[in-house]
Image (cartoon, rainbow, N blue to C red; front, side):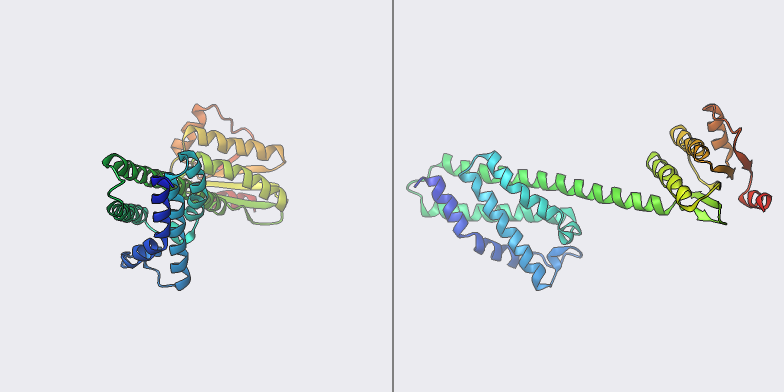
Length: 277
């Protein structure tokens, strides 16, 4: 049996001990995250994740790096989507990666001490370098995948917030109000267009009041999308009335050459509704 295989088997035989010692020395006073959990099921799952990392990491000694990273992928995808780990600050998780690596160093030293006759300085350094390499790559990959997962989660939450922040409120059987509040960016303007058209069709709306008095900022791209909404509403038979247009928004529209020919405009929403009724 090769020396490298012997080291792999030695480390793997110590993996359970490593996990128990790692957990015993874990800082359980963290103010948030999975490491401070007292739930027995969460603790066992955490230990299982730690043990599985050992199994994958030690394969760097006997397999090609690409094969090891393929095996590591499923572990990373599982842990970065774990709700308990997602709620754990990333600096705590990186700390535990580094602490785990130090545990590996201690056991490699134990193996070297037991096999002094056959070990060389070069081979010992090589083993340390492999462990550093696989743990460093795991940290980078884990951080990247966690950030990607969080960005996707934030995108979904943002879409939901945008949908809820642009409701078409029915005033009568065929009349409705769309109050727009807050800053309009490109994403929100896109969702606003899609949702407004869908809701107007679903509710059988023929007249829509769009109130812009709560809009603080609007760039040229968003202004184009907003007035594109008005044109789209016209195509499906919905007449629009704009109220609360700020001077800067009006100026932007004029600079873009947007026509208000088919749009009723009032300074205040109350004025628009009084005229209608």
